[in-house]
Amino acid sequence: MNLTNKTALISGGAEGIGLSIAKALGEQGMNIVLGDIDEAQLALADQALTELKIPCLSVPMDVTKPEDWQTLCQAAIDRFDKVHMIVNNAGVSGAPGPIERTSHQDWRWVTDVNLMGVLYGMEAAVPLIKQHGEGGWVINVASMAGMAGIPYAGAYTATKVAVVGMSESWHVELAKHNIHVSVLCPAFVQTRIHLSHRNRQAEYKLETSVQEENKGKKNAAQELVENGIPVDLVGKRVIEALAAGELYIFTHPSHRQSIAARFKAIDDAFARAAQSPLLQDIVDDPILSFD
Ligand SMILES: NC(=O)c1ccc[n+]([C@@H]2O[C@H](COP(=O)([O-])OP(=O)(O)OC[C@H]3O[C@@H](n4cnc5c(N)ncnc54)[C@H](O)[C@@H]3O)[C@@H](O)[C@H]2O)c1
Image (cartoon, rainbow, N blue to C red; front, side, top):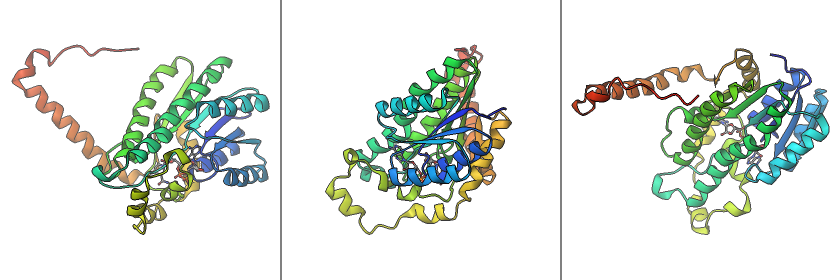
């Protein structure tokens, strides 16, 4: 894996996991293009990378706007000539709560940033990576929530399961172009994800009644995030997993057993389906392959 002098686009790269990955890729000799909605943090991140002598460019952008992705890509080409990697990292947590009390505005916000933002990033960057024929990488940041549903976080879970599924599709689809797709699935990491509302765009503002209801509520995620793993570990782990050519990148081995229990529950359900008198004629049907 030779990353030297190659160029990576990183959404949500102004802080947290995105900046951790930016530093780790920069240490491998990559040029870094950061995109983020928070201009003040972006300036600090740019300064931090420059002090580390990492060639970098930062572009204010909102991942929910396809035209912002075009601006980011054009800036990257103008400065570094080619794009080899996209890290779709920008994400928001939404407000946790039971089904009937999760606002549609929140669903739209979380879906537009965490899911559509990844799609728009792929639409803009993948043609550029294909274009030079040197191959490249896609790293989509999902979550452990993409491996098993989290109660009271339906919207967040839906987007992260989707990002895992999209990554699996694209892993097969892009392999013939020598583009390797990975999906990063961390559990809790020490970042400001529990304060995601700081980046909520005006068009997704919560209705006044929901704002009132949320006022003074304890932020349930805060303690979990504060007890998470140090953020610098994540970037380093990504480099290790990229070198190993992994599709799924995990950072929390302690979660292995709970995910294994989920797979067992699914496998057990298959076993029961295979025993069903209704399905005996199709038990050995051939599996369709799309590739
Ligand atoms: N921290 C955790 O415990 C954890 C666990 C699993 C997955 N993740 C995922 O990691 C990713 C990064 O989160 P983090 O923990 O570093 O959080 P963070 O809040 O520290 O960083 C998120 C970054 O994304 C940016 N951002 C938010 N909305 C944006 C938008 N519309 N357009 C562009 N940039 C935007 C923010 O300004 C910020 O720089 C997210 O996808 C998150 O879901 C985090």
